[in-house]
Image (cartoon, rainbow, N blue to C red):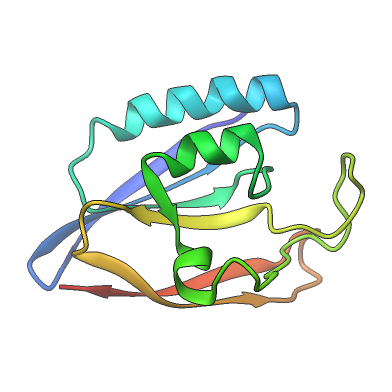
Length: 137
């Protein structure tokens, strides 16, 4: 079973929504869950940050769908050429390293924008943590 969570924080007099989710491995189910997530997120006012295990890679159809409304914070800060792998070996084909965990930020609202991004390698999970610093103004 999958779910999502959100919290609203007051930072520098800005109401910032921070949401998280874990999307399925199956591409069809992932798209269905992403559609539900996008509908749910539309009920929150910007600025919104969305993080979690998206089980998708840049270039995937689901990735491009979400990227139409949100900006991949890793790409915005580190650049598309920086790998930032959060999974050493993916559970599904292609069985290669990938950045399947991510933080996303508003495209049109610049009050909360990532300023740094990095991956913390850990043995506590089969994923590594992706972390962002965010400037709220």
